[in-house]
Length: 343
Image 1 (spheres, rainbow, N blue to C red):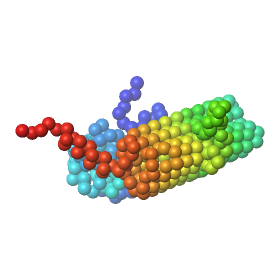
Image 2 (image 1 turned 180 degrees about the horizontal axis):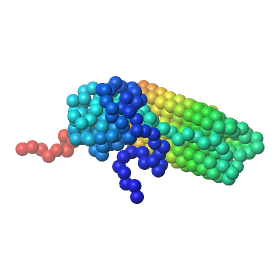
Image 3 (image 1 turned 120 degrees about the vertical axis):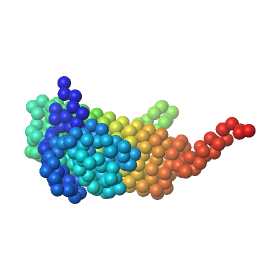
Image 4 (image 1 turned 60 degrees about the vertical axis):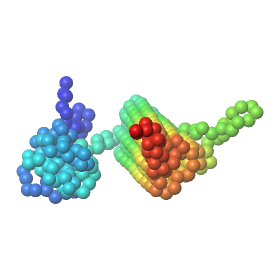
């Protein structure tokens, strides 16, 4: 068994290279010293060898950097002096961003292989571009529209009338109904999109289901994590804004509106009709009550319970969620009170 500790096992990941140092530096957007070094791949600082590249994103890794055997390392200018003599320093203001580009150079996204597997079921009225890849046992229902260069994973179900823009990636066993997707949307395995929301009223006869007549709109470059669920709207659409990324196991209820370039960590639950501004970060297991509004660039801590509106740029933690400085000040006060009296 191959137990290589280099990143990107070729059994699972497409690999290119080796690449000259100049090519790698150009991908990272940084200058480089004259060198004939050839780089074969990526590795962590602790495990990288003389033909591999690594990166440092924070000063806390300075000790590991000083001991690395990597052939080249992406570092910020203030850490150049920590790069050992045997490694080439590639200087950039954004090592993680440069690393992402270098990773794409060595491990480009797998190309779509056009064609429909013979076990897939595609309705006669569906419109599927000739460049689309449809994997085994996928289902594309009536009047669905699948744009150029999409990949539909095995066992995925694209419901009646669903629209996928170009270059979408739909993972295994995803189900999508009542939805319109923009360009370059990625949905990881097991996600459920467009099902009825938790909409009902209570009458003397018990629960009465309220019709859910809206859609789910996923704008360009949205990513939806594995086993995440996004309910369609009731009277208005559920909308996820451009560039937003949802982690695994997130629940988005009906009528929710999330802005552009938000990050929503795992196990977050957002109740119906909540509105999230642009560039918001929601920590893992945070919960948002129905109809609350979260302002642009706000940050909500892990396990926070948001029960009222959050101002633009605010940082909140706790349950109920309150300004982080206020909460931490109270915690510090309680710690002082809890200390035994000093004689």
